[in-house]
Figure 1 (tube, rainbow, N blue to C red):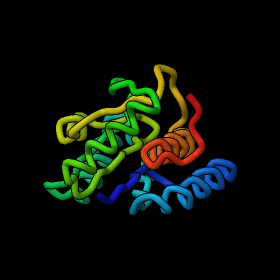
Figure 2 (cartoon, helix red, strand yellow):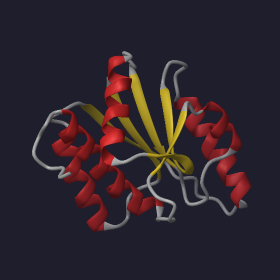
Figure 3 (cartoon, rainbow, N blue to C red):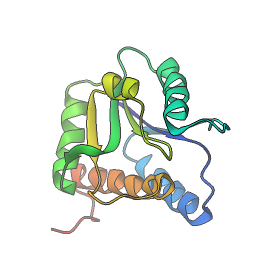
Amino acid sequence: MKIEIWWIGKTFQDFTQKGYTEFLKRIEKFTNIEIVEIQEIKSQSQAKQLKSLEAEKILNRLKPDDFLILLDEKGKYFTSVEFASYLQKKDNQATKKLIFLIGGAYGFDDKIYERANDKLSLSSMTFSHQLIRLIFMEQLYRAYTIIHNFPYHNE
């Protein structure tokens, strides 16, 4: 199974980029993973219009058999162990490509919600889309260490 993490725009916080890059290197030891940065739309458009334009870019990149998971405040909550189990099930189901999508500053357009196969919430709190990149990468790494019985996660 290939995992792709998609997000809108460049990472402009140095500490965030250093952190997720470190976790990316660690995750690569366990699975095939790639980060896909979708070019930010520079526009003075209203939030709704901007989300719609971002949705077009995202939908044009998706293939019909891609399994799309939104990182969204309305998504499912998992413990780290439950998330590891979720990933393992997707791998066992022979999911070809698992895409985790981190939205832009205004979230997702309705067209993205309609296309999504699942939604995952990392917290009921709101975090910047920049910081979520680092937080999610750490949780993804943690999940793979749980799956492979690698010493990192403590229960």
